[in-house]
Image 1 (cartoon, chains in turn red, green):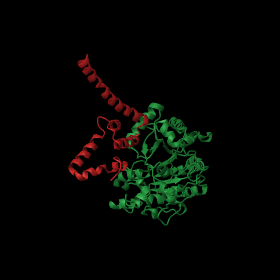
Image 2: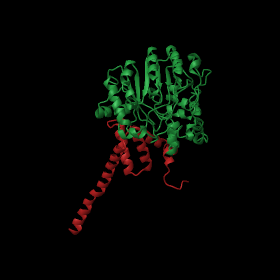
Image 3: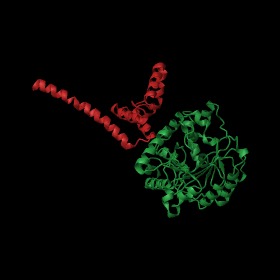
Image 4: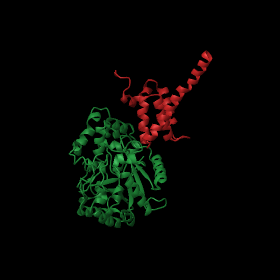
Length: 111
Length: 351
């Protein structure tokens, strides 16, 4: 048993989740593959969205995977960092917009 | 950024036997990953056999004006292996009689061979359908004596194939050296100016993209689209096709993979991306590589690993196309580099 919660080598084993639930695993990977195909959005745009979400989800496997995926697609480090800022901005905005709720409550209780 | 070859630095990895040991030990010895031989045997593709020769690739020397981070040739200004006119003459005798439709000159920087121009002039007379020179671009701007190369290439209807790792300065210079991007851009503009790479021009100008680090190349067509858009918008440069080439884990790239602790992950990535359809058209089955001293190899990578052809015919002086056809290709784990994803060859993807 590993002594750490995350092991980079585990990413390679992701496909093995299918072994314990074949039908659901296969459905998931079919869906996953389809999502990232070229569509109304380019595969490159989807890769950058995935990178931003990987950060907001704070998933180390996804961060490794979509950093590498971006490099393979010729995405620059400047583009990657801007994408992460989009995620960070939404995260902080989502925190701060709740400030309105706090203000409403203060005004109601102590206005 | 390295300024000397592994050979000059007397690195352990300058020894090809050491490289082959690394490629056969560890994860391939303990069974974590299958050897290339076992992998192709799974789909009944072992042994790989040479088909009819289509491409004759000649390495006219390892000397180069650049010391690129990932060079599989370990080329650089300090390499003195240069093809002599005598060996070139032996090559010309073969070029005149070959059934191959493509002649492909490479190096090092082939233009630095003192007999390069003579060789091109003579070889062009043989009338091979596609005559490629792999030019690193910066050589065209390196010294006044090379400034007329675009005109020289045009005169002999040479197909120019040049390396360009990215459309941005930072990524290009990181891999190929400070100032390489600006010089390459200038060289491309000069090639365009004489007609190379223009949409309807018969003067072919193709670019080679290989990744700047420990990752595989993306989709060749998407990369070509991105390169074309960026080079046109930023520099008004045009070219015909982009060849996406996978870095093979040998020589300076192997050195980089080990030093950056990426070796195992990279080999896993290559094996996971293994594509039997790419094996079908892998370049060693229709190419022959000639070294600066006239010896024959299945590909430029085997040349650098000093793995000669498995044939009675070993040298260009005893060349016999019929005897070479059907030979068993010499393989090791580096071959996974040519069979990953859409495959990889000196002419780009193969599957």
